[in-house]
Amino acid sequence: MATEYGQGYGPYSGAGFREAGAGPDAGTGASTGRGTGAGTGRGRHRLPAGLRAPFEARSWREFGYVLLSLPIGIVLFTYAVTMVSLGAGLLVTFLGIPVLAAALAGSRGFGALERARARGLLGLQVAEPQPLRMKRQGALAWMVAVLKSGTSWRALLYAVLQFPWSVFSFTVAVNVWALGWALLTYPLWFWVFPMYAGQGGLQLYGDEHHRIFLDNPFEITVTALVGLLFTLATPWIVRALTMVDRLLVHGLLGPSRLSARVVELESDRGVVVDTAAADLRRIERDLHDGAQARLVNLAMGLGLAKEKLAEDPQAAARMVDEAHGEVKTALQELRDLARGIHPAVLTDRGLDAALSAVASRCTVPVQVEVDLAERPAPAIERIAYFTVSELLQNVSKHSGARFASVDVWRTDDRLMLQVVDDGAGGADVSNGSGLAGLAERLDAVDGVLVVDSPEGGPTRVTAELPWRG
Image (cartoon, rainbow, N blue to C red; front, side, top):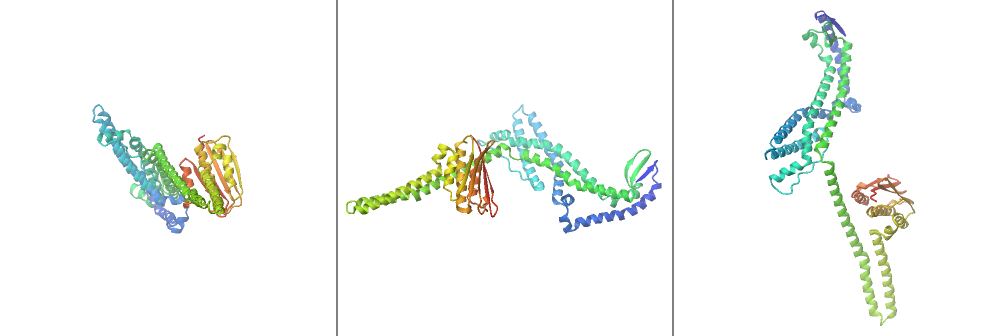
């Protein structure tokens, strides 16, 4: 580190030039070594993320996003402030309303462009907000819908807030990026100072009495290392800055929580309707193919027995006996069907007794433990019963288990169900099995189904339902 006293630069010109001649050799060596490590394909893939970040496409896309944010922010801020000020000033006349509506509509359009930019450069997937809902056609209805839309006002707020943030993020990102690369490449360009500026190197400090320059090989190397640290830190600083942009885009340009909840409830309503229709079709099919067919056979058999009663009483008695068996079978099928819809024991005695009855019909021994101080809402109780019934049927038909257990308990405002068996495992919700339909049924009431079933078992299925007592 050279320290110069007074105003003269001449005495250090030769020394500075000579150090500049030695410096690039060392600097070139360091630069070549760094370039070799990063340029080798095998080494690049094995580099830690911190060393790899400056060369990744993601880092450059995020840096490009920050660079574009400033000019776009100027346009958005100017448009929003100008249009809103003009509209507010014209509110004393009718012209202010269409101007404000135009300002909000333009903000919505800019919001769509910003979502596309965030999607392309940041990889941020933001759903489209709720479209305008107009009760009737016409310009006045459109203006009313725009002014009443929360999405429009959030887009306008984004246009106002994005500008000061873009100024800050642009300033920080560009300065840190430029400082890092300037210091890192200092060994390659420090010779400019002694050759053209008449000083030994980059000035670190200076006042009226002395100046300090970075002009010897050690100082040049340290400067490059400091630049390397800044260069490695720049992508993470830029990424931290873009996290705020992500929050702004997601929070102000995406759908609101209320509208997202409405969409979710509409979807759940569709699932409930489809499930109810499927249950009705299943009941109709079971009645048509089961009890109804048996009752038809019973009527035919009793008719034949009536005809033979006079001429062959013994044959008629046998036919009546067969009809009696058909009646018993039909009654049993009707009981099973009614039990599958809503068993009487569930209404009368609750989940403990109803699940114990289901467990008694399972092909493997089942231990049932129900720890509930009170009963949940009937609809939730019905879904819990159906869930355990379906899971125990899977245990009977597909698991090959020797033992199973059912646990039911309450945690805060959630009803928890867990069915465990020691079978072969391999159950998967995503393969379109009955578990997928069961998960959809639970999701329709804000429930969750979690399946843990590794190959070889055991299988643990946990269901979570809202309590709604």
